Length: 152
Image 1 (cartoon, rainbow, N blue to C red):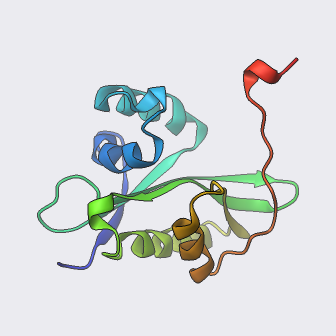
Image 2 (image 1 turned 135 degrees about the horizontal axis):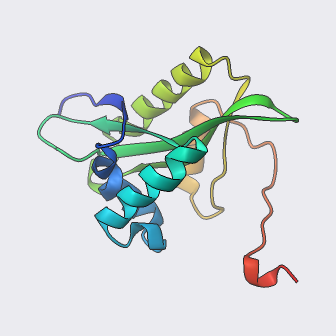
Image 3 (image 1 turned 180 degrees about the vertical axis):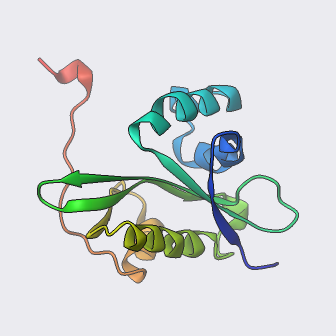
């Protein structure tokens, strides 16, 4: 199998990320269909700064791995690149797609003069945690949230 190539996906290419992101976020309404996903990403998320990078191998039209990310400022970290999503389709794990994406993301962060790269990861994703630690990320905080139904 050839080494993956990585590129950023623009409008009109968003559908290429659907199969991979569905692996990570299948239960979310925005991924109920390819058309719903494309409309949500292109019409809502991209307007908020969301970008997609994807890894491809020869002979596979859809991305084998995908990274959704944003660049923004926060008081505690100044300019940062935040990874919303990083996933590899199961049949392409251990092909180098995630590593190639992570190298791409670091290059984007560096070229945009970001001080840090951040991501959150669910507690039960030990394989992902091992990958992040092996690629130089550190566990630096706990993330807290509350669903809307518990706002009162």
